Length: 199
Length: 252
Image (cartoon, rainbow over all chains, first blue to last red; front, top):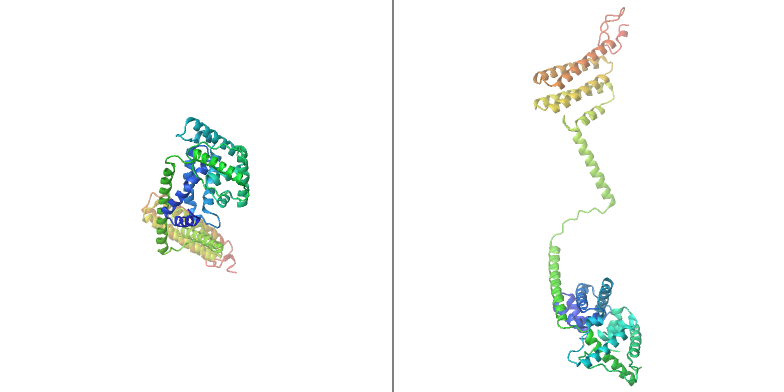
């Protein structure tokens, strides 16, 4: 969905058009969920927070004014704040890896074990990033935001986001052993999702 | 992107594949999660929209209705004036309640004291005022007796006795004033005696008659001493009570 369409839906939703809000939900629900799931420790928390973010968006929408901030950035800022509030108030989560792992059921036991290893390495590599670097990866790769949207969500300049992303990618490549020209371990086969990332 | 060579792009693609696999395996919503969230959120959106529409309709209705005047006082001067007015009304109301207080009411004694307090200072006018008040107290006593109100009767007669004492004290030695007051009290005594005939068991009437009679006696004694009707030994027999005050000098 292009920005113009999103802006039109936002205007209609502000006027009380429920169908327009449904369009916004359909566009952003999965990215918001992925972003939240990358930062909380249980699927139920991710579900609750995703719902909360859209309820908050519904309440705050009448006060939303573009003013150069992309709607996606504004929405992800709500999500970010909701996560911060949730982390601040709850500390009884299960570790993400044990709680949310969903490896492919179709793969052989060996392939599944290999995939699990790869994913654990990715999780470790992500854990080694700084908070800002990790958040940029989450917003850009997992949620699929543009640089401007990620900048709006994090309250930073676009140039800062690009710098953080550059350093995060370099760190991930080092951690995962996929330096340029080096043979990297390909992820085990399994269902994947294409996340559009504009580098 | 131009900063990356082919090897970089290859490694970036590999990294992207890994991140995609990670996202798919561990971050994608399972099953009907999004549909559950969608149902809840859109139900809330519909409720909000309905509520907002209702609020708008109410606002439109309220906007078309004539506005009621707002009774607010913003000026400090107006607030002070209002407070002063309120206090004045309160004072005036209390004063009216005192001035109209009937015998037996809580304000009656205050009224009697106030009426005595405001009497003029000149002796003749003051005694005339006392006589007027005595007549009023007596009238109140008669009215209370007529309506069989012993409390009001007792209060009126107690005030009457107090007024008799005050009048006696203020009358001085002027023969005309003494005589007039004595005459008034004699008339009151007759009225009270008639009242006693109606209410023989009422002690307040007896006390009032007693006070009035004793006052008459005192007035007579004072008149005698100030204007003796019998001249002292060797004095002029022509001196009478009609003299202007000092009779012993009158015949000389």
